[in-house]
Image (cartoon, rainbow, N blue to C red):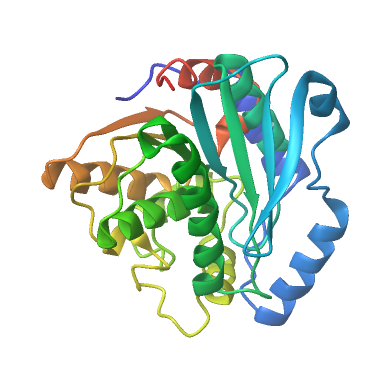
Length: 297
């Protein structure tokens, strides 16, 4: 479904990103490693104090991986969300993620579990997925897969699909649903429709994003289904709701995912927002408000 926007707020956001935080087009490994290290010094992945004052928060550990838990105070939620954050597999939680998580908690009386999974280049796909999947299993075994929504943005959206594929391959129950914000589905970035979008995308560059994915893939090919779940088994997965914007180089693969899910007899609702940038739901706009009305938990 294509929305009627864009709003003036979204256009301002694109202008700001393009002129104040210009994207990198460099795929040199040494440069990327230095950039990743510098970015991590400037970001804070701990739960913000503001959210600690608004919600009940706690921490746990699975397979050596830290997990955050948030829920409304004085509540006993019956539905649960496993949120897998994005960041091109190399960056941790940032302020936009906490804004999304706050919106989730304001929207519904759910508990949130957020895995702080290991990042590339220090960790590669097999280690990352083992820990992310273990975190989900612990939650689903406790509360029931039928009461668990898996939600993810960007790389986290790709991990959410990979998780659903792993569950199917191991004869485990699917989660209640998947909610995917601008999912990163194909690390090879070879969809021919990307070329026309890249000049409009204020955040992502094919070269840099592919270079970061190589750090995550390790010895696996970029078209390996564990790295790029668009090449994996897309039949009999949990129903999903997908959000993407037309100023995002990952949007063509979101369309491809929805088409392939339908072709395999599955359920996928696709919401496309004109001129919306990557993971626009982390930015306050009419489009964000609309997106959060398009799914229930």
